Length: 93
View 1 (tube, rainbow, N blue to C red):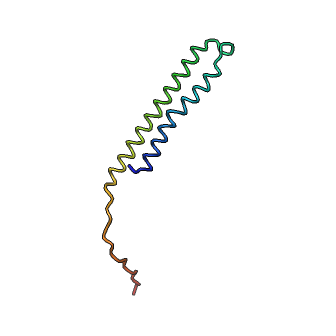
View 2 (cartoon, rainbow, N blue to C red; view 1 turned 90 degrees about the horizontal axis):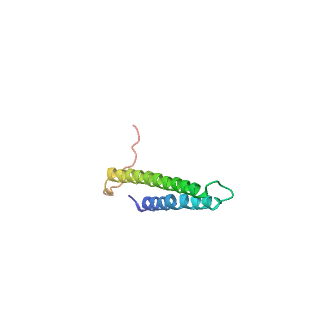
View 3 (tube, rainbow, N blue to C red; view 1 turned 120 degrees about the vertical axis):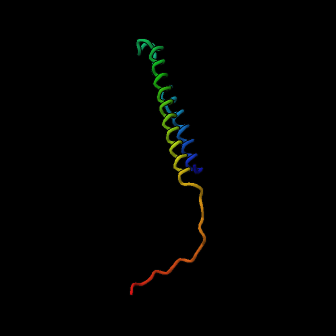
């Protein structure tokens, strides 16, 4: 894998782990005893949704990283050919 691909996958991993957690904490801040019947149960449900979305995102990133690895293996090592002069185009007779 190329370094830009690794950086993108690392950034995506950070986003997959941080964004659902931040949204879940924001949602749980609105779960107050007067507004929700059972705030503990609702907070636990939010935690399960956040955990599930994190696991789904990480599994998608694992599949994407595996695909990137397969592409890099199939391309093989970079080889530079000899620097022959370019032929001039031939004119038809």
